[in-house]
Image 1 (cartoon, one colour):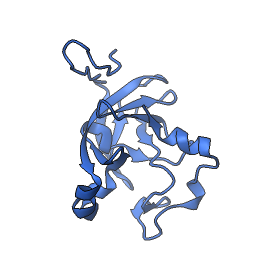
Image 2 (cartoon, rainbow, N blue to C red):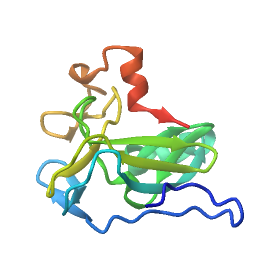
Image 3 (spheres, helix red, strand yellow):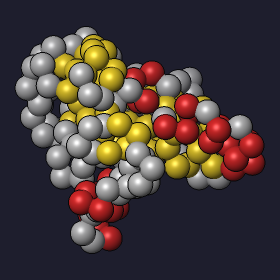
Length: 164
């Protein structure tokens, strides 16, 4: 299977396609990514190209829209993951089954299985320590974040945000 590496001759990026992924509606979380078949730990699940917003554009426009809930911090501003990248729901650090690596140079995010994932399971990433919704209900919250899911060490935090 492709690893999403840039082909030096064509400049193209091969994008893997797992035919077992689907969007479903979770009763609390809303739409999310689920698998119809088992996925083995280490499998490259998805590659999302990103749409970049510099700090000024994001401050003036993006943060005032629903896009604010779907962006990733990025070098020089923020990025909206296209494809399934903005559809992965959140699990607190240590409970997520999908990890992601931001490839700043290529403008991509790679999503990889952190453990074996069973058929029917929702694929979730860790959004980091400052979520904007109540973890018990997955409803937007005025509290800003849940202290119960804070990574305990700097190493824990860095594992949430792998950067190439």
